[in-house]
Image (tube, rainbow, N blue to C red):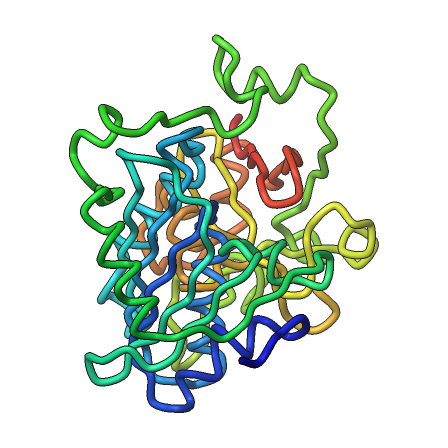
Length: 320
């Protein structure tokens, strides 16, 4: 059996699609919605056909799952079948012994096709160069039998009474404070950056920033937050197309990524319109409407502040 220690992403998460596989079943002790988001976006970026992703998170029965990750999984599932991209189904092990296994099983035309097992959880850190992980080939039929063995002990993450089965924990100690999350992060000395939503001339970009989609053949809500080069190089945000999770001051969850040439833009990678829709809603203007400086002045703010909670989790403040 082949042993993989480098380029795990392509070997185990992408290449089988080129070989005709159309579904992956993942059993992982720990997993993140940012990894699932990256996986879905990468499949689309490489112009591969969309697939079905079934994810079983195995350690929830032992130590629960964070609110950010839980809400992130539910958000990805809500957008299933809406963008022509790969679909996600997420289940948590909620009874019996916790499962620390890592298994990646590919299905082709309804039959087990190939499978990999090893040390790598379904997280961006495990599939990056920052970790030394390994995966090796295993028998796909045995892998499918293992999945069928544990599947009855799972519950869908979208189950109406999921909190009765799984501990949903605060995303970060600072967000567990009794007062509002915004007050907590402001008073905690957490590293932050404030980014202007305006172009260099002090106005909203005509076809950039919040108005990125205001051009022919683009969806008019498409938007990005401009990122200065010195901030991009500072290490504050994750680069290399890594996805990161953002909780907003009004309680929304966003998945963002740094992209474009010279890492100059913060976007919502699965759908570039989501960020524009979010800000237009906050500004109380219509979807698709051109954002003017007057709109921002009327709202009372033309910048946004990010607080870094950890490497993949941020808090975004657009309050006034």
